[in-house]
Image 1 (spheres, rainbow, N blue to C red):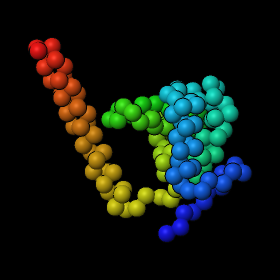
Image 2: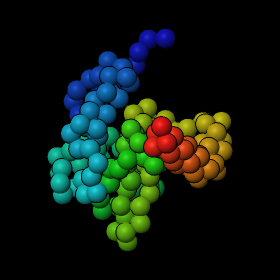
Image 3: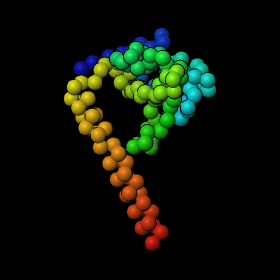
Image 4: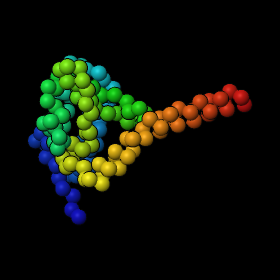
Length: 141
């Protein structure tokens, strides 16, 4: 299957993978963890908005949006997530990875995501418990 090029802001990326690397560089290296992307990184904010416009639920998710927040994922400490901050202070997540493809998730993917989400707290508690045990073993030895 041939690679499908992506044109974004006048530049053509040979593949989704190349475009993903471009987006990842902006999020991880140029902005990083930030509670106020709009004011601290205004040029990157505009680029991120253009990227997120590719998300299939962009219009509904960004209603009454005033800013973006980038933060570390609770379950994957190496990953960064993006939340949309609403005018009333509420936050809603938006997937920058989904914005790369521009396609909505399949029903199967949505089901798997819902099932994983239902056990997020258990996963977090398990990781926390294991970390405590590992630390206690280190102290004992």
